[in-house]
Length: 446
Ligand code: FUB
Image (cartoon, rainbow, N blue to C red):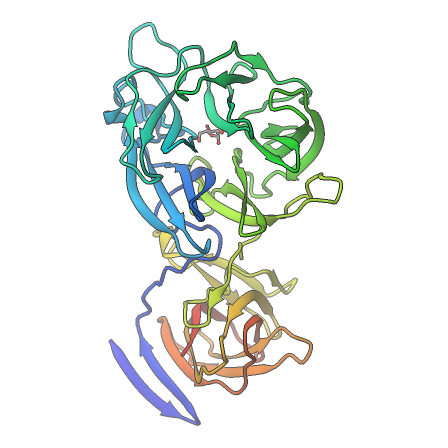
């Protein structure tokens, strides 16, 4: 239904809102669960190899992890992600137990023209117990991947991570029965040394190793339970085989209680990023997780600055794209909150509620180009009606627009003229300047 209403320089365009899916904010993949995100840069493009949580079709896993396959995603800007579809599934791996639904955290590396995708799962066979780690090989980072017939001999465990050192030697790290490492042969599918335990790590449950090198320092990073749930922690060393020296926390426990975290750390276009997961789309069940990204910085001595998880994530949002203020950088101490638009359908995303006068939210990095936008469009809902002020969050608090929100019981798309803008990338400040209670799904500029 579309209804146009005109009044006082404001155009109202009332209709049922469509839920737009834009990238750039956390979580980054918005139509399926994506856990254990391993990010790798191949040919100047970011590829994401997560595991794929699904609601369990079998009783045994109804309250546990359940994963049948892997998708791969890619992005040039960390904002728009392309889903290349399923690259490996439990049915097409000869050694995996059918219906084990245990395609856990993977990794993928490139060596001499081939992409090697490493993944743990449960092997078939009556006497087989626990997890093994297999490999699938492709000519392209997005497949098709051909699985090896057997898992890697000599590994029992989960969460593979492969580091290829400057001399071409590859190392495989995994967890399960301790935290292990071994050399890989040139063929990348067999061990070339006996597994050894990583030395120098703190006591407590650990899994999900991710190892990378920067400026001659090897970083051994891992989820670690020091208290109640997993933190991301790290140790530093000067050899891929260790020993490592424990250096502290990369990301603290989730305040929302998601028990696992699992990550990767990668440099892209001169910026380091932490990929990790959180149960954004499934607050009541933490085995349905979603990949996130935040920027990561090093101190001058090479230690890692602790990362605070954000809703805003990374990347720049085009002013013409849908801006979701519910993925804010900051909000007022009271009167502002986010919630699902439709709690029955979490993938429809969130809304921002401003529920008292002067409640506000800040959303950073919107690109206005030459600032020629004339109209602001917002998808809003308000039982009371209210007045939304939109400003740039600069020293002058440039007034971009004021949008009267009509009282009503449905979502409505409203438009108002742009008063003033500035060129380039700007931070936005949204506030309720009247009494009332308004909800905002998205905003964009034309
Ligand atoms: O996704 C299943 C398991 O949960 C992973 O293998 C662990 O690292 C944890 O994230």
